Image (cartoon, rainbow, N blue to C red):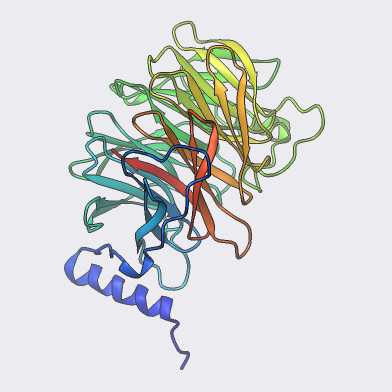
Length: 403
């Protein structure tokens, strides 16, 4: 008889608890605490302590990170998922506006992926709901009532996928809205009335009316052919052209052909005043800036190599962009489009970014390669320097700040 591994035993115990009690309890692992990583020399230490959560897809863990006057450290971690042999793949992570709960998507479920809810203070399990194929990026609405999740469908056929809308109180999926192939980058405007995502294989930005629960507009992002249109995008628009030269098998790491005009969008970020949406074009390594009112492109802004995810400061003055191929993070002036700084990361495959509520620091997740651990790097947005970094589980991705 084959002997179970320690991981399988832990997973079996977790699964048994879920079946018997209909709850899976998160575990605060005191053994996961680290000595604080020291701060960079010559940079003022933070005057308060910040707390962040980051999901590591390859090891099915969420790490709790604290960054304060003494530096950054992991203060706890817990497992997410129930599959015995294979990773569940925690991908996206979002904290509620009041900081009481957080949500994690696991992408590798059977037959579909799952959205999990946890208590932020105790990491205890609060519930779950099955969504679509490979649920990935998510965001909680400003009033805390809705969670909107893109179903990325990474491993399925290259067909149009959808966006799930979930009630936060009951964890009930109230709508699954068709969009286009490989939706990614789930972000809402400041009032929670509009949702923006991009379709990596269909060159589209999609706007959803969250009151009517339907696609209101879409925007073609191919360089030289930019155009905003009303209604939902035509299904499989990119298929006739072989997906316009897309190759997302490396999740944004593949170098595009010389002279390619294919955007390969990976993220959409509304401005705090809701007047602008910026789209990260991983293929052309630039940003498309769109005027929301006129639904026209204002300009294309040069970005780092393989720009991937975006975050904007609450005062709207700075965009922080992760550069997946460039092994770096860029800080961009939103008024001028100038690159204020490009900061190299310690490891490769730079993924997510989130900014603290006071606009002082950006927390960046870096996946790492092979057996390397994942990393969270912390950037001082005043000094424009990396001030701390801390190792977490392999393939660190989804990340958020506890307010």
